Each structure stands twice: as C-alpha cells, then as structure tokens.
Image (cartoon, rainbow, N blue to C red; front, side, top):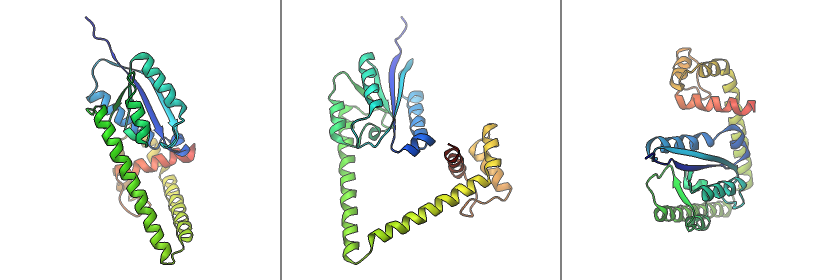
Length: 226
C-alpha cells in the first residue's frame, strides 16, 4: 500500500521592504526549510503552498499568514516555518496558534520540538526581548543624565552607517565584473574569493576575501540592481 505524502504549507516572513525585495533574510529561511525537509521530514512529502509576508513580527494582521493557516487547516497539512519568530514575536499570538486543534506547527530550526516545548521557547524569547529593551532604556536614561546628547549620537551613527554602506556598495561595483560572471557560471563562493585574492583585490576593509564577503557583495549588487 502506497504511503500518503506528508503535506506542508511553508510560511516565510521578512521584516522590511528592502529585505523582501533583495531576498536578504529570505535566503536563510529557505536554507533552513530545505535542511529540515531533506534531513528530518517523513517521506514522501509534498509542499502544497508557500506564502511570504513582508511585515514586522509585532503585527498580527498578515494576509499571507492568514492564507497559509487556512490552507494548512483545510488540507490537514503542517505549517512549516524556519524559526518560531517568523510566526510572531508575541507569545500570546503563538499560544493562540498552538491551541488551535486543527493546526500543527513545525519549526525547521527545532525539528523535534513539540507544541509544549515551542510554547516555552516563545515565552523565554519574549522575556529576553523585554529584558534587553529595559536594559537599553536604562542605559539611554543614564547617558542622558550625564548630559549626553542622544539625538546627536544617533545622527552621527546614522551618518557613519550611511557612509559605510555607500563605501561597501562602491566596492561591490568595482568587483562586479569578476564575481557576477563567475557566480553565473557556477563558481562557488570560495572559488570566487580565491580568484579575488589571487588577483590581489582587497575587500572594502583592506582584508582578504572569504566566502561570506563574496556573498555580501553579490547581495549588494542584487539590491542596487533592483
């Protein structure tokens, strides 16, 4: 007797429009989903739907998540996400989904976790975020009490960040004629890095190239071309 294929509905979420356009953040989620399906899923399996929202995890109103949930319930499929915070950053929202008897949630990064374990993880993650927020507010208040001009610090930081981004974009453009054709022809990130290093081409910071720095340059070129 042929075994019925296990059904999955995949849901992705990226937090900003820029991430949605460029694929930043989405690529990592796709990688984790693929690792789960290849190494942890029952076989055979079938992906019956894939949905992506470009929204903050704090927002409950996400149309693609609603569609994903409806399909998963209707088809008896598991809702598969890369990480738990892709569903929501609020433990109350995650708890409501966990309590849904018609819904089964699977998290690729925690392939063997059950609903109870996922609920605990969500609660701990929310506590950690609250603590970090409180710590940041206290540090800002202490800096203000010492007479530090907080707005000026933020403006200076933003200017430095913009300058750094502009420099990185310019550096990526300088090597575009090398790295894009090599990547298109099937070269690995390591092979591209080796080629740049052999040609004595430095990174924007004057260092040798590594696979991750090549990856960052390729992503910057994709973003600027969009």
